[in-house]
Image (cartoon, rainbow, N blue to C red):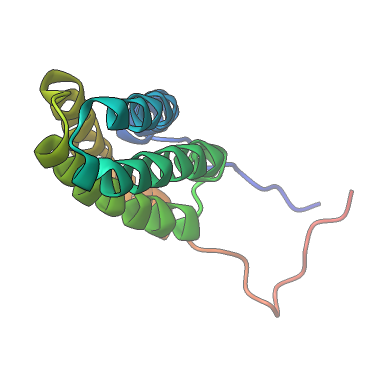
Amino acid sequence: MTSTTAARRPLPVTVAVALVYVGGFANTALGILVLLARYQVDADDVLPVSLVGAATILLGLLTVAGGSSLARGSRLARNLLTAYLSLLVVLQALALALTELDPTIIAALLAAVAVLAAVWIPPAARRYFRRATPSAGAPSPTL
């Protein structure tokens, strides 16, 4: 009988997962606010503000979708969320320049940086995502 032990998720990863969900929903809401802000900008800025808002909504929803995979320790989810959050930081910087939603956007920027720091910096988090996967030649446990 083979016993498998599940790796316990470190606290920084748990905090990052919670921040991913909160940040994903917050970025979706922020995207809606940016999209609605297009009615308050100059006519030349309507299209860029609309595109930034729509992209922020999409990336916010993709971030929420990746949260559960991140909780399971998926390296792919960590890399995808890093890419999503990096794009969101760029989009939020554009939104900061194009709209007047400064406090909201700054809070979203800080949340994105906090998630990236919680997933990549602590040694326990790096070990959690680097843990060994069963090799192809190893026998799998039967149920």
